[in-house]
Image (cartoon, rainbow, N blue to C red; front, side, top):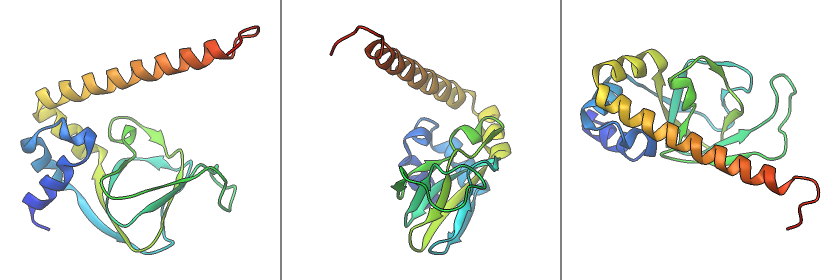
Length: 158
């Protein structure tokens, strides 16, 4: 893929769409593309996370198993092209909440946190748009939690 193709692909990722083409150019130039074989583990639950991955091709099974528990747990999901894995890892020190295993031959773009943060420093307007987007999502989540909490209060009938 050319840099222009990579920029176009990154624009298809909802979170990245907010950043604008010039900021995405920095990410496209600095990211690493990686092939992942069928059944290969991209990362494990509980591991430190220092980057995000964008699925370019194929698919990944995300298993919420706990680190070191071995074996696939129930309740996983499968994601495909255009999905950003490790969004928060682009911004803060965190650990992987799930294990990602390739469900067939796949490819990802690895975006290191340091690259992402440097890009935000160089494009403050993109940083503001991202901040506003994340704040909006946090408020929506808080509202959803409050709704669920209220429905679980003793004595409340649906």
